[in-house]
Image (tube, rainbow, N blue to C red; front, top):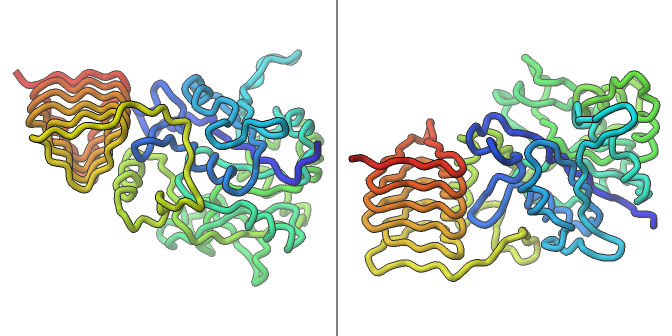
Length: 376
């Protein structure tokens, strides 16, 4: 059955800058906002944009991510002509083919795309926090007669050298691409979101007999510009966060607490879905004090929680204090514990009397399954 547009989510990254938090799971599977994982935002954008065939390309530590995605039921994609499909590296007659880059991951999955026979392919990163209507971007793509459309977001000129920068003419056509330029000519940063006419992209990838088309930013986009293909920049002005560092992950979670946050998580017209296991209702004891916090299902709180997010099944003992922190799922925090400016990984155990104190510029981190001893 021919599809107008399918999505391919690149979700194989390790996320080395997240340190302990990605020691055992891929970056897109890292918990976010109490009851979500980072990849939920790209998946939910697809669901809300009526894209119901999604290939999720995994590689690094995929077990948790694979279990989370399943067949896409949580996002309404499990059906006769729809679904989410996990795509991993595989062995062939030429040997095991690990993905060498973003475009190479697509090359290795041409057969999957071909069986869906799409006119357009949407390429997404699975590790950004944002809401976007991809159908609006597709209408822009078709209206411009584009062969490739790149989503861009304005950044400050002081930050532009950290991104791939798209220089455009007055019609939004991209005339030059600069990868992390020292002296940027514009502030339109690539978001790693692309819409390709599938036939044109397929022809380019299949004709690459030398294996040079490994990465979209470094190889494919410059090749399109060299061939004078119509490449356009789709400007996005909403909230978008790359949570690739401890500081940016912490900051995005703290921003999530704001009732006036641009993401508006309570918007029923554009919901963020997740494969979330519901637990018992949370319980706040008579001695606890909770202020400016998100408390997920199954939490048991006997201490004080301020400006923090508690994921599911977190336990906090008497006279303990948690502030300015993200506590991931199934964490057990003992009595007389102090946690401030921290991220605590899933299943961690914080013993009685422990002190985990960071600063806004240096967030303290406890890894998955890690045990932190208390003071004697």
